[in-house]
Length: 228
Length: 234
Image (cartoon, rainbow over all chains, first blue to last red; front, side, top):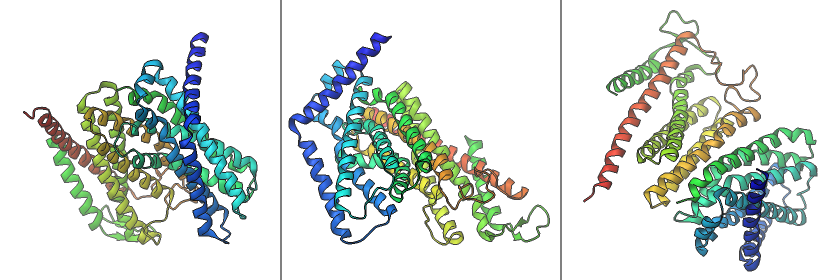
């Protein structure tokens, strides 16, 4: 049992490090994402100028940028494999469970990086964007990123086999992510208005439950999507 | 199916006629007069149409999910036909529930749309159906289309408990059973209706579900014939 767990952990780590390495080697996805975030944040900056939005509005503006940059970044996980023609090899050398877990971790890291980049940009450029309760904010972004990656990894595997991939991914992801968004928006609002940690605890329970349900469901269904 | 068809037509007609025609008075005498519900007045009639249609939407969604799981277990094309037939009927009922609900909201709460948690959840359901049919149209191979759309139906179904049960309780809203509903008993199961209204309401539930079963049967038979034709083209 232990030996079996150790080998499967190794293959998950191998899939993850393969993804990280191939990404760092070319970097065009990361560069494109950085530019995407910069353009969307500056569009909001131009639109707002000297306005001081409420925390509720800021929470919305924050997650809109995170959502759409995640949509353009996370779809690459499997589309890249199909484009490079490496999905057959991957299918031969690793179990579906290991591939799903590796991609899930890679996507979680990518979403966390995106969210951190957006946070830093917002803190630097918007004078009105001040996080009052950092504990709520950090936990919300962490759980939100895990939830987004958990729900969209299997969808990314699905759209890799479809036509019109780029447009399809947000269409499929958005309805599935709405429960998550309503909760993170509520929690971010609380973090920006300076509520106590305990007041956001209900939101965290929903977010943790959502991520667990999505990971468990995707892990069960992933083989159906991955194996032709 | 003949019995289902006869029952569906009779009961839906009965509910439509009775729901509109039975008078509402402040002090009802006998079985053929409804009491006036304060705050709802004549708008209360919509309860016989809107609520059963909304429940049928959910039934159609669950049936579609059930057949999606059956498809993934067996890979028999029949289950995909059943799943997509139920989804397309669910989409129709979802649309009807949205329209009847928006009209009711206009005359009771002041505007067609208020982003009450239940309005949000029916909106999510509309989006899920939209995404489901978009996904189906984007997949060319029949086998892949059946498999991936079944997976999507299940993944979307996994979020249903969140927006059906968690969100309406956590957030304030206008529907009965919301967080700040004074005197509300949580779920919408406490109806505060008189016995004759309750009877007609449950007849409505049965009627619209039978209508769904009958329409599903027709859709599945059409789907099977189309499938047979594409398989035996030459």
